[in-house]
Length: 102
Image (cartoon, rainbow, N blue to C red; front, side):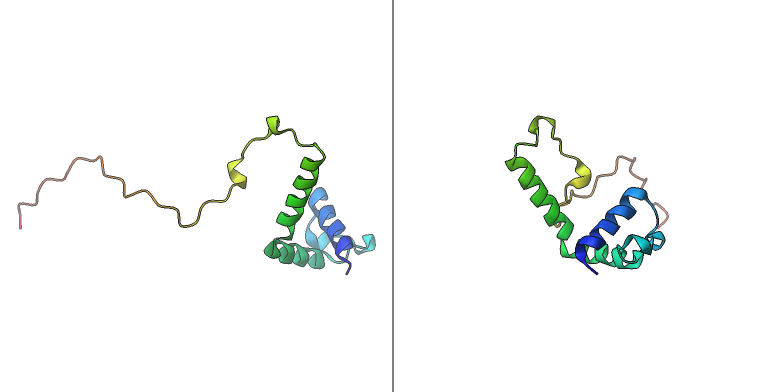
């Protein structure tokens, strides 16, 4: 199945909110399962990230991005793997009395 048609099917599912299995075959986008598999495979291959970067680069080159209105959204920032973790927090509870039975 042609990648462009499958991509259109993916967009159709995402925009309409229908289930993958409900994608009408008559539209010519392939089956919902085909579209779902391409989403999975393309996501693993980083295709959508590359498309996003190309779109940002082209929009920036055309002066279409207003950086005065750009903010960093923490949901889109990757956490650093292997970053140092804070040490164990010290307890603020009162210390237990010493055991006098042993």
